View 1 (cartoon, rainbow, N blue to C red):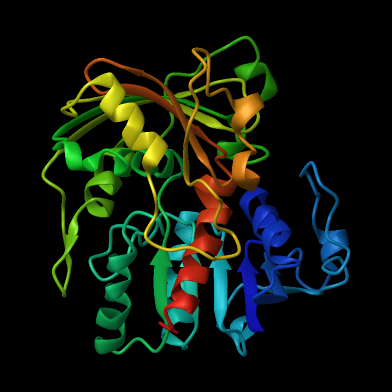
View 2 (view 1 turned 30 degrees about the vertical axis):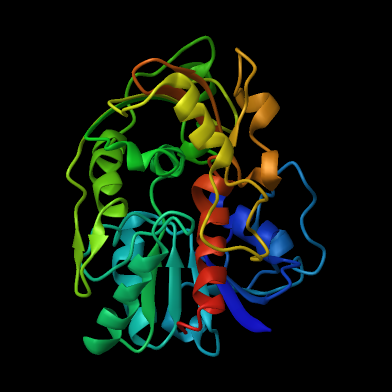
Length: 338
């Protein structure tokens, strides 16, 4: 078993990490880390468990440790659900101490030596781990993208051979993406908020890095343009995206691309049977009906129309956050990169 820990284990994404790792066949979750006010408490007493499944019984008695290098000693992998401002220094320190950091934080996504990975899309970018080692880092940092970027690029990967150069996307993002206390109830009920801070820039820049080429030393951005408009809507879980592309091909050809899409590897514990699933009903995908497909790891697509238009949807805290990071770690381990 590979010993792992979670940074920021009491927050929304941290709880998802705990849920996914508690009974993982490869990973032994032996350390949960959180703020000083939680440190020293049993996890069950430190966390306000908000998920729709019970807290894993085998984790409740773990003592919460403070976030930092000392708490990470003896671990092989640390999963980070830290706020970006805190993650900037902490993740580097832990990686320099020899631990693999699989991060959901945005702090290092655009660093030149850090892979920004969707496991099924750009596994070759993990070559940057060796670049980090060559620069003197004993461990490594591997990041997964913003939750909406994951839905977008996962779907685009099925049709990228159609010479896409222009992408426009409008998101309808669930409130869980802002954390438990991120959106006041009176602000989101009966409402749509047409602004999510820094979200549009993340989608527009991260997509280019993920779909770019690794030249052995760095990532060369993909030669395309991305324009995003991000909105918060009163949905609990599940981000929905309306996508416009300049993909060449008929509606039938693009639908067949989605239907026949296969990823370049298999057999990882968190990997769904279908990473991208085409739904042919006119009114799908829908968050309430489709977010938990593939145990929350499947991106559903539908409503393919002329001009490379389609709808994509996925579970933002699983596929778009903790699950993506766990799948990255499984890929790293399967390829013996740590």
